[in-house]
Image (cartoon, rainbow, N blue to C red):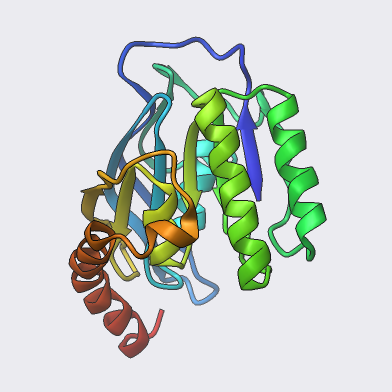
Length: 226
């Protein structure tokens, strides 16, 4: 999925996207309450590239939908360039990440950039691609981002991909009631080649630090029913 916010959204000083104490819960068929997210606060700086990683089922996509205004959280506040979101207005061109083929991915990204969004919200956009095509697409995305410096919020299960692309990696805890467990600045040189940067000693060290944080959450997710 790729979502772009309109160029005409009013800007405010500071963050492009601000999530304050977001809570999301759903009623189950049995009448119980399933809490997806709890006390999630995140600020995404304008022009930055932020990647979010976490175990399966931790609510990463739900968080992205909240940021996009596709879902109004029952608790907390969402601001885009200082203003509350109001449903779908100002958002363009969603594409399902399940579409196969590198060319379809190129078209999806190109269409998102053509409408000149200020923010791109991307949910596993390269998940269905083979390794070589995926790396090519990652480098194309980085090239476009380097030229335009649009704000990107990027969901991925691949920690290496997150570090190779982002300025900041956000780690989500296991669900239910997932929260933000850690934030890591990625102080690696740009421009980057996603294959070459993985050989950088600082990349390896940062991967080890983040994986120490993420590994426990992945284990919890595998051991606990959702």
